[in-house]
Amino acid sequence: MNALAHLRTILWTLVVVAAVGATGLYAYATMMRPAPVAGLGHGDYQLSTHEGAPFTRASFNGNPSMLFFGFTHCPDVCPTSLAEMTNWYEQLGAEAADLKAYFVTVDPERDTEAIIGDYVAWTGRVTGLTGTPEQVGKAARAWAVHYEKVPLDGGDYTMDHTASIFLLDRNGEFQGTIAYRESNDTALAKLRRLIGG
Image (cartoon, rainbow, N blue to C red; front, side, top):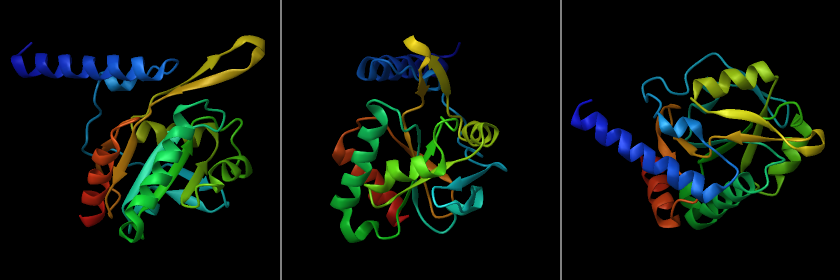
C-alpha cells in the first residue's frame, strides 16, 4: 500500500469512527469506502414525488439541490437533518430562492406518497420521494447509498442508512456532501458555493 492510499484509509477510518460515535444506532458502512464522484447519481431510476409526479435523474436539472435518503420512522438522524435543511433555508433567505431539497425514503414498504408527504410538509421546501422497493434500490445504488433493514423486538424494524446530504449543481451533478451534524457555518458556506456556481 502506498503512502497516499494508507493516508486515505486512515482518514476514512476516522470519519467512520466519528460518525458511529455521534449517531449511536446508525452504522454507515459506505463511509468506509468513498464512492467514485464520476457518474455518481446517474442512472435510469424513476421515483415519484409525494404529490404523485414522476421523478427521474433529469428532474434535478435546472436547480441546485440537496438530496437526502432516510425514512419517516427514523428516530433522530432524519428529523434532525430535515430541521437543519429548513434552518439553512431560513438563514439563506432570498439566496436560496431556487435551491431544491429532496427526501428519498429507504423504507418504501411503509413510506407511501401520502405518508412521506405528511412527513415533509412542515418544512415547506422539501419534496418527498418514494417508489417501489426496486425503484428505491436503483436510486440508492446510483448514489452509492447504503441502507439496511434492522429487526427490532416485537416484529418491528428500523433502517440503517447513509446520513450525508448530497449537493447537486444545476446540471444535477454531484458537488459534495454535508455530513450529519456538520457545523452550521460550514454547511452554509457549501450551500452558498453551490448556489453561486
